[in-house]
Image (cartoon, rainbow, N blue to C red; front, side):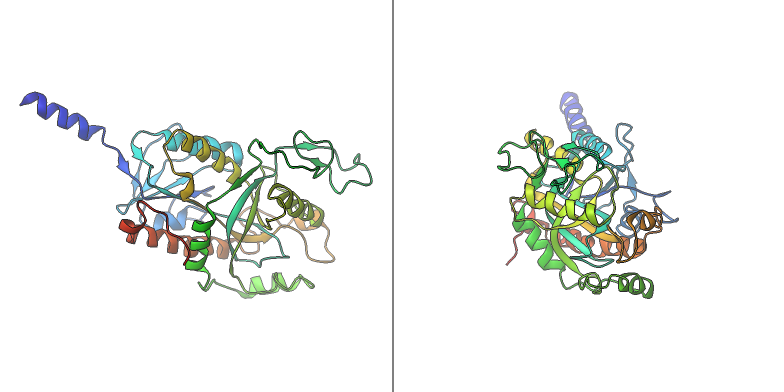
Amino acid sequence: MVRVVLLLLASNLFAQIPVKVVVVAMFERGKDTGDQPGEFQFWVEREHLDRIFEMPGTYHPPRMNDKGVLGTVTGVGTAKAAASIMALGMDKRFDFSKAYWLVAGIGGGDPQDVSLGSAVWAKHVIDGDLGYEIDAREIPKEWPTGMVPLRKTVPYEQPLRPELEGEAYTLNLSLTDWAFALTKDIHLDDSEKMQASRARFEGFPNAQRPPLVAEGDTLSASTFWHGALMNQWANDWVKYYTRGSGNYMISAMEDSGTMQALTFLAKAHLVDLQRVLVLRTVSNFDMPPPGVTASDDLKTMIFGAYSAYMPALESAHKVGSTVVHYLTEHWDEVKDTPPRAK
C-alpha cells in the first residue's frame, strides 16, 4: 500500500500541465501590469495570466491562467526569440502537444497594403537576415539591392534553392484563413492622431483607410530597417522566397527565430507545427510619407512612441484574443483537429 501511494505521489508530482494556447509576445516595457504597456501587458491583465512560472533559462517567466492559456515574452530579435521558445518548449512541466501558438506583436506596415492600427495574419514568415550583403555604395548599377540570397551570386537569382536553411516558413494556410475569417469584421480603434498621420501618405489609398484586418506576409529581421527602397527590397525578398505568391505587408524582428525553434520542437514531437498563428499589427509605417527622407523619418521612430503604438497593442489583443477565446471555449472541437475556414 505504501509503495502504491508513493507511486501515485510521484506521478502527480511530475504530471505535465496541459496547455491549450501559447500567446507569444516579444517585449514588455516595464512590469507585466500597471504601467506603460508593451506587447504582453494587456494579455496579462485582461486574460488573468496570474500564475507565474520561474524559468531561469528563458528571457521572461511565463504566466498562465486557469483556462489553459500560457503567455510568454521572447525578448527582441531573432536570437532571443529562438532561444526563449526553445527553452519554453523543452520545459517538462508543460504538455504542448495539443497547444496552439499565437505570436501577437506589433510591426512596421507597408503603406501600399495596410493602414495604421491594422492587423495582419501571416501566411508566410520570411527571414530577412540570412543572405549576403554588399554595401549600397558598392553594388553594381544594374542591381536593385545589395542583398543576395545564400548560395547565389546576384539578387533574386533563379531558381530558388529547393533546400532552404530557415529563409522561409509557410504556416498552416487553412488555419490562418480560419483565423482571418473569424476576425475580419472586428472594428479596430481609430483616432485623430492616426488619421492625421496616414493623411500624409498621398497616393497610398490603403494607407489612408481606417484600421482593418488582413492576410499577408511578414518579413523578420533583427535589423530595424526603414525607407522606400528597403520597403521595395522587402516586397521583392518575400516574393522571391514564396515563388511569387507572397505579399509582404508588415515587418517583424523575431518571427523567423520563433518559427525555427518551433520547427525543431516539432521534430522532437513536442509541438504541432500545424497549430501556429502569427499576428502582427501596424504601429508605424516602414517608410516615410512623400516628401520626407528616410533618415528624417527614422528620427521619429522612438521606441514606444510610434504613431499608432497604443492602437496597435489594442488591435493585437482585440483580434488575437478573439481567436484565443474561441479555441479555449470550443476545446472539445479543436483539441484533435485544427479548425478550418468554412
